[in-house]
Image (cartoon, rainbow, N blue to C red; front, side, top):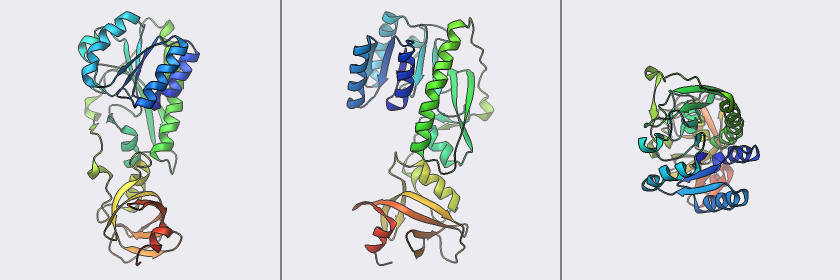
Length: 295
């Protein structure tokens, strides 16, 4: 059985269904479009399906699982905490696939955090579940390299594809293993990231280096439509930008020059070149934005 949160798990669902591993699919807090699509596909494939639209609906999960009697329950970005009463279905029967290394990157949006923190690699962490988010014993961390210029969207797609292969490998492994080895998480290395707020997605021109700003912009594209910023007194979102290795003598946040890009001074005497941004008037190139402003 697979419990998921939506589109991120689709490649895994497709592969496991093709290999005839899936007996049931549950979706938590999914959009109406995704929920209806999954319901249609499961009906055509004779796979049990159930939607859990909110935390209260989890009370129905115990009876649903017991009626299907799956050997294991895989969780991929399932948004709700599963209570002990449901986990009691069986010892080490619930396995979570977390899209970042544990215990360093616990939380709801680790892909955002690893990009913002300029990590060179991330992972898919496979671990047994307990009554706390992302804290169960680790089966293994499958390392995934982060490419230069990776955005949240690019990395998410690549992790989704790798997730399918990792889940299939685990499904094949547990067919023959009498016991799956695991080890407790090292709490000395643990950190839990809360869901990002405006303070986390906002560019502070006076305190952030050029590379930190580029990392934040990439980490916010596309889920937040870019990184939030103030420019020429206007609240904008920067969707795409690159680092210019060009010195300046301006205050951070000042427009240094306007070419095909909008070149902004950063705290570390570097510049970023804004290519695409979003304003109240819509998404536009930096050149178009510049033509609307007295720069």
